[in-house]
Image (cartoon, rainbow, N blue to C red; front, side, top):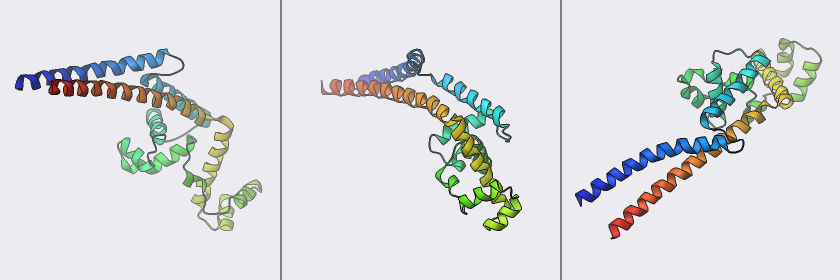
Length: 202
């Protein structure tokens, strides 16, 4: 019995090594077939779009382009701004993440629900009112006016320039690649479990 268990342990170890190699093979195949990208190419494509946006919109933030690329990727994994900040290594960066996310045209539903009448905001903006005048009319803090002006400006740019579509196209390749690797791994493990069961029955 001990020899049997030792043999199965060796086989499981070999399987883990094969799965690691298979993951790389799947990624290479994903890169070769169609427009599907491997994980390294996905990261490079994402970073290229982020750098393009930094240049086009003169984005200023304490986050590096690589960190901004992570913000995009983690946003599409449905992480909150605080969770993204934690992934970047500093929970205190949550406000920085929030402002950077807006500049990258990544909006949450709550971003687009201002604590004032949006039509009135637009009317005052078109009339050339100052931030202070708008704040007094809408009865909110000047900082709130500035915040939502940035949000609405980014929203307009998003509709015009369609960077979010490019993000989604890049990350859809990542989702497909991950599903392929997961399915391949699960198949390998199931094969070993089935073999173990059959051997034990024998």
